[in-house]
Image 1 (spheres, helix red, strand yellow):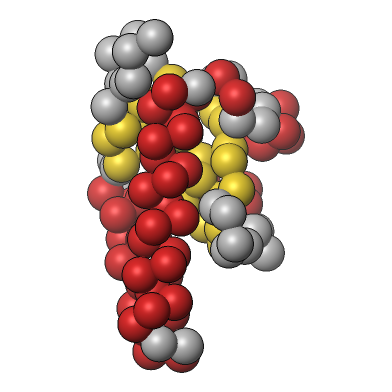
Image 2: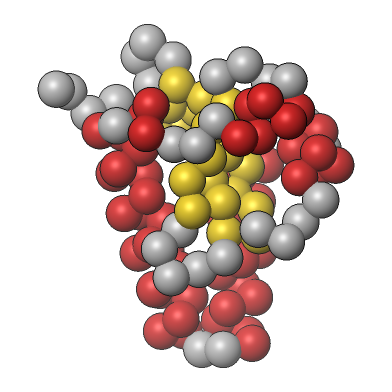
Amino acid sequence: MTEKPIIPRAEARKDINLAVEYYAGEANVDVAVSFVDALEEAYTFIGRMPAAGSPRWSHELNLPGLRTIRLKGFPWLVFYVEFETHVDVWRVLHAKRDMPAWLGDTDD
C-alpha cells in the first residue's frame, strides 16, 4: 500500500503553530518538540491508513468524509479528508474546543 501525502490547509498550519508556541511558552521546548513528534506520527498513520480515523464529526457536522485522529499524548485532534491522491488536513484542534465553530472558521 502506498502512503498518501499529507497536505495541511492554512488553518491547520496556524493551529499547529499556535500549539507549538503555547507548549514552548507554558511548558518548555521539549514539550513543544514532543507535540510536533506526535503530530508527525499521526500524519504518518493517516497517510498509510486514512480510513482508520473516526467519522464521528463527519456525522455530527454533516461533512461527508471528515475523519479525526487524536494525537498520542496530547489532547488534540487532527481533522482530515481523504482524496484519491492525498489527505487534506483541515484543522488541528484542542479536544475541548467548540468543534462546529472552529471548523467553520476557515479562509481556504
